[in-house]
Length: 272
Length: 274
Image (cartoon, rainbow over all chains, first blue to last red; front, side, top):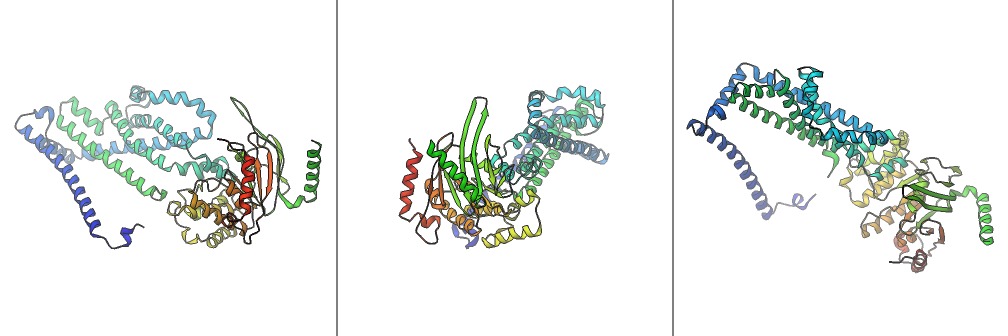
């Protein structure tokens, strides 16, 4: 416990805390002001015909589009489908990736054999696999999830395996002196020591899964935010495109924050 | 040559007569490592016997194979020649009679102190109520009971070392192997922790083998100091350490007049040049 908590708060500390709070408020206010200013100038510029709202859309039209989507009941359908695909994609990516990393950690031979293939697959832009996936999986949610998986899987394997291999050898030696077998080394040392790495890959995978899902929806879907964006573009309805992009930004941020919150809960006791 | 052969026969004879007295017997131990660049002869023909309750220090030039020797006694490495007997039984794999103390405490961040202390019982699958109670009693005796639900980062360096020792003691080993233990601590803490751990080891009446490169530390703790040669490691000399003081402890030893004598003798044998 630091002195400041035990003792009465000194005048200097009060001043310090007040300054800290003031600065925090200043940052938040500026952040909000920036956003509001951006949308207001967008709206005014569009109203004064400084920019062409047919091409750029404008906030008031976006609100209207949003209301229409909401009234038609489509809003939650589209957002729901995209979110569901993303969640399935990133859970599958993390779980499959971690399981494959465990197998590769277990067998050094296998990991040496597969190393060049992993490097090639990691370098390959996964979007190029899109047409193949569509032909194999059909034009449905299956393709979209596989797309998300393709983008996140290899990164997860490499990230998690790397974490597994950098576990302190002395910690492994310690449990070996207790007679630990390979499974015990895995469950008592390697996995718990890499809990943070796995959670971290979850965080990366959320982002990558969004990329995969939107990419997949561009290619095949009949619903979802990616579909709304590509459809809006095709029929030149920029209001729909802009609205969908903003909904997408909000949904992606919320999901990322959710995982970040989960991380905070889970690694609370890991110290440091 | 003749003399050394006779001496060996004599030693062997003595060992057979007093076989039960020795808890660790090492005979003709040799270890060669293979690597792409060639063969490394780490240990050559080491004979060593340790009595029950004895405290042995092993010193040697850095990189001489001290840690290899310890890994062999742990059962983690199989020697290329010779053998190790623990309680008269040939060693195959990690033995439950041997407890290992690594350089750092290596308490697991994700486990509470109690969970850390129970690690060995968990891995050996001997988590009985009796054994668990034994571990709890150790925590009580050595003042860590109230910290049992804390996480390692909440403890001081000295307390962490205690917890690490209790983790080793919890599986009731008869022999403790201290591998450069405490060397990760700063000097002042280290002196205090050494004293602390020494007293616990003596109180629990354990046999201990300490590997170190610190001459003072080896003298202050040990009944015998084994000096090894540089690679390949062989036994160069064995010093019986005797102090006249009562209630011997590592700190009080350092005050004794004999201390300097032992230090100089070992220092000369290690033959360290910059």
